[in-house]
Length: 262
Image (tube, rainbow, N blue to C red):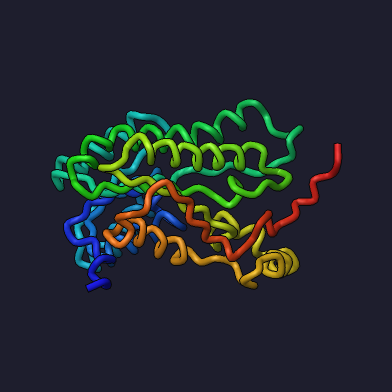
């Protein structure tokens, strides 16, 4: 039956940045579809809460707290998954981010950090996971990119460039790792997470963002989780090298930061 193609029974997924927001929703969604998980992030208390929710679903989960900024942290995730479950079928590269700022206000350090935090981390975890993903017979890599990597807007020279690089990395990896491993990206638009809380507390800005979105609403974390569940599942077995835009139809930022001309 077609519906069975969306199930993740016997799958083992690693999800980074899983303590809150999109990463948390993706981890829980994969568990609901039948996967066991290794989840990573810096905040142990938040990770433990997510672990409890996954356990209540009836799936096994191991939380690994600590920095994932460098390759050593990624190796811990891989070793933990293989030691406990004996395999890895899915990697979700979710960690990333960068604070928007005008081009002349963006330091060299901030620009380099955006690339390392969004792109190098995905490269490292994927490369470390490849032998195990290939052995699984249904390996899938899902990179959480951004609409900012597809549609340019003022203020996103660092973050937008990093996410654009992540999208290109996705496409290149999909060719290098085919046919044994599928690699795809999700490009969210404005999603209601803690990262947007400061902005969304302003009713005028919130209204402007909604009005600037063709679907006339902001995204929910479960919108992204549903896309990840699909891309990880056998239902997407013929899908690789794709960027799935979950953005409400925007073609530029729906938030004007009013950065002046130089």
